[in-house]
Length: 408
Image (cartoon, rainbow, N blue to C red; front, side, top):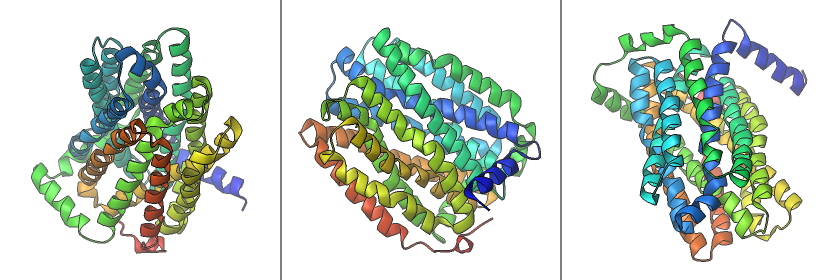
């Protein structure tokens, strides 16, 4: 069977039995939310001018966004275990839309930062409910389903930031945010109307005491490879957030590219992820986590290390493509975590892990911005390459076979 036939067969299986509509609704909402979030790096130069903030402060703004995106994942997971996933996702999309309006109207830097935190919090309610619902809909194909959903997220991150950049240049930076608001509102309505009500039965089976659920989660984290994979996920998020948070600014200020060219390369980074994530998710289902993770992370180690010495649009485009394969890591690690937690605490477990690693990883952009302010922008990327090399070495400790991973 050719690769094309294999991919076509996988897509047919995902669409079959009436499940395709739910997948499209979940993925569409996720793509819109992530696309809205990734508008921030493109607009950072405009925000720096409008609010007179340094590179460190700009990095801190991105950190605030990531922190907001982290803190709601645990309550989002608890709610997903007890109530309707579709309601949690709908509320998240609508809240993010309202917060973007506040950002666009911000009169001071303080309001800008506070509203940005609210944008992140709205986004943070969506991902755990998305994963738990996909686990119910696709119990035997979570890697593929999550890979497709995450690829749609990259599609949103590919399309929306360049549009925001064009609107910011032609009109004002506020226009680059506000055009997303109706898209988020539509996504929230579609998720609420389209997804099946049957998933709301989770509340009947869930433990009524959140503290007991959290204790159960930590008990499961102490077993098998859950804690170890969570640490790998933390290091990956630290690298990814540091890289994406200031990459367009780096291309403009260090490589001499125009804002439009920098936005194009930034979008290209996520465009490659549209291909990488479904392939990585399907590979996880077939050959397991260890081999798949090593395959998607080795290239980016070299790419990040070479970034300071490469000049010119096309060489930088090639290097961006090499670095982009690391986007497949999320589909692999999060599929493993979803498989490994028991069904009773899956949402809570994913919420604990993602809130913890995303909160800690959110320190990356502000630390990276601090290095850039002190004249170490290039060296920062070499440091990211070194950390990613550590991730690859840690990955080699994982079991080779997918059957070695716990499953419930």
